[in-house]
Picture 1 (cartoon, rainbow, N blue to C red):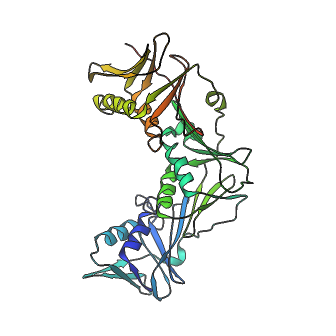
Picture 2 (cartoon, helix red, strand yellow):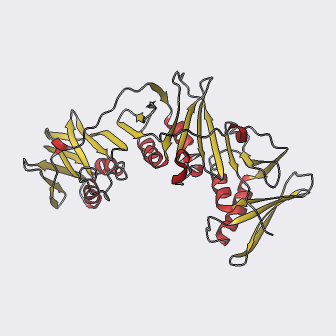
Length: 373
């Protein structure tokens, strides 16, 4: 094989697969990338059996063929090359010669013929979906997705196709829930309820950021696939039943309190700084006549408080919240145009929901925690 490819093109392509081609594995092929010529360019393939990637990229093909190289090593070489174009030339003994600018490198490759076969199938559920909507679904739910391996069914993003052409995207753990309802521009005839692993969502985000245009989504009970004009990606699904959280999501709270989003965000950031980003640190939100008090105190950290004027008229009420979780929930609204965020409060020991007026299809819920002051 002999090809010439722009350094920037190859560097961006290889960056998409670094988390897939696992350098920590003892299986050499899983740590490698397969580069194969095609008409007008090259195909890059990577797989770790759980996640699989195939992408087409422009290149000048001087001699057809394929090579298999260690992915991390090739990526680091490409990043450090100083030229604008890289030439690859392989021999029959799987040696690969690279030249770029004044640099010349010879790398040992693997036999491309024994690279694990990669296959993308037509799956039962298939529909077109906006890349920007898909990214929004991930951004607004990722923070709430669980990481506790004892609760495998919460370690991924739940995609459920509802009636009336609506899709529900949900992330949850034992302490919070985040739900986004989307309505695609094109009709969705598919049906299903699947769990996409959290670790695959970061790879999907990279592909969305790299790509333009809409995507084709397809899935069955085992596999989720994402296709763009340039890239094919698939991941195994978490084979478990997602819990039914409708009772929590549909609760109507008697107290609906709107607070300035930025002012509240800065107040919680101060508490988070004070507690040295302790993920178990607790704050207290106290509502009194015309005011919301945000405070935290602990002997090791000191104490801080912020008073935020608000339209609250009722009995004094305090609710304990995990500082980091509250901050994550507020940051999920960063791109919302609203200047106010609405807190839906039932009582000191009941879940609290957050919404904004313009994002009527999005809601996040936080479980209260005990406070001892």
